[in-house]
Length: 386
Ligand SMILES: *Cc1c(COP(=O)(O)O)cnc(C)c1O
Image (cartoon, rainbow, N blue to C red; front, side):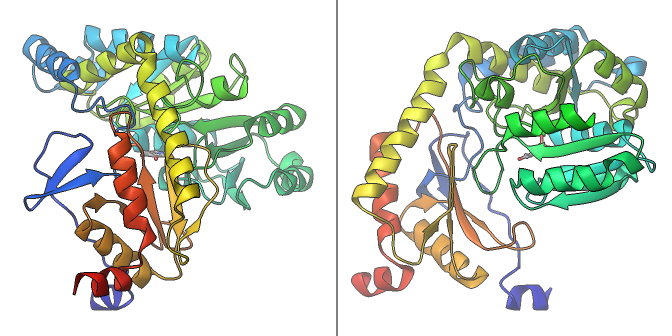
């Protein structure tokens, strides 16, 4: 542990005392929250809370068993239908978390005779799912479809099944996977594609359906994984796809078969979240207009020279810094200036960075506050204060 701390790789938790929202308190200090995945501001919404309470009153606090035994409730079916409708797929299946959805689905779809091609920047759950499956895993440089094609040409025909794994929105960068090119390659080489839309569901696309809708690929055969815990404001994960895929997962995905069904309260809140996604498109519009406003503010008042913006096409914005130590210094300085941002370091990512994410209920004042806080380096800020 000492070695980890010395390398500035130590990890610590922060306990927030509030309902989720754009302002949170840390030991009494108010902070503008740019560290949340609650993109649409639904996790603190009264209607989701009511839906969770209502579901708990009706069905109890626990599902009491796996879905195949005693854990199935009407609310699971309603939620799965709503998710399939959102994703424009035949069916959907809800897991206890997005992480478990990825583990179970990948290990069910491929095995030791198969090949996985994976973007180097994929989320931990995709990486561990690939490992768990026992398939041969070849990763390609981030977003590099030329390299992906070369790997397919070289290796595809030596394996039975092949699966491409990619984040839809890359969680620690905020850029998008080049989905149309990937789907073309998949069709040419007879490969399945799994897109992890954890940060795209509710955020990308005209209806918030995610990557396929954004890229105009709706209706194509893709295994779409999502989470209920980000824009949808609850907890849990899901897979959306063909009826055949979902039926197959019900028979083969160990993390679904052998894990207790999602709690009624989580299912209830998530269902309300999906319904609000459809009923209040202005939340998503607001999120994207805030992103535009922030870009304008940053162009007019650029951040300190040592912060290097990473390419982003989503409400996740990242700035690279030279070392884990500098990232921690910035995280601390921002907190002193009233901003909560995520400090992301190796081994989560190859290079240290600040990660900020927008929420639909941020205000222009919050964005101005952030822009101001990013302008002055941690040390300069000190000398101004002293
Ligand atoms: C958050 C996240 C997950 C895990 O989802 P949980 O529901 O929190 O387990 C999976 N993939 C990506 C890309 C994520 O960002």
